[in-house]
Length: 179
Image (tube, rainbow, N blue to C red; front, side, top):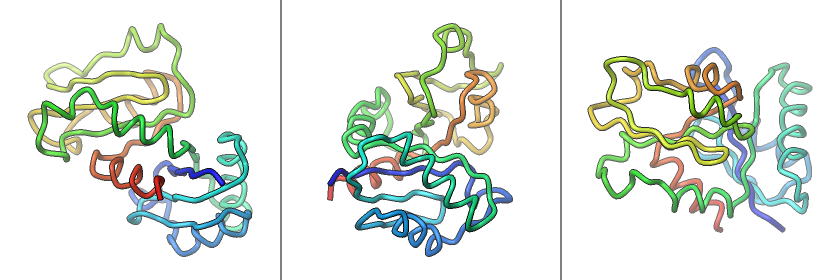
């Protein structure tokens, strides 16, 4: 059995409301084991014999649509992939405040031309590194909440679906996926 983390985009932070008990039940009903949610923002850790992350994501998306009537993009990472993300943050050694570090998870790797064109909106102090299907973000002067360099901005600029998690959540999900 392999460990996975499903990251739902835009759940319980905007207009889309999903109860975590419902989410756990849906993922369990799909035949996955040891299903746990983390916080209320659409993070699900589970075990599965399925090895295709895309298939897992589509299954969860379809279950949410079919049972809850909601269209919610789902991104899935293996426990190994999430451990690599948690161990590969280029800004972790420079920042003691985990609220200033985030990771945007991308549905697919963006085109190199989109990555080359990605720029921080004028007047903002944000560092970013795009690595495959992740964007590491560092906000040294303050929080993500006041920035224009948001998940939506990244989606528009890179042309891919994204969902962003703070560093504390990334580390916690990596730890849960290990178990």
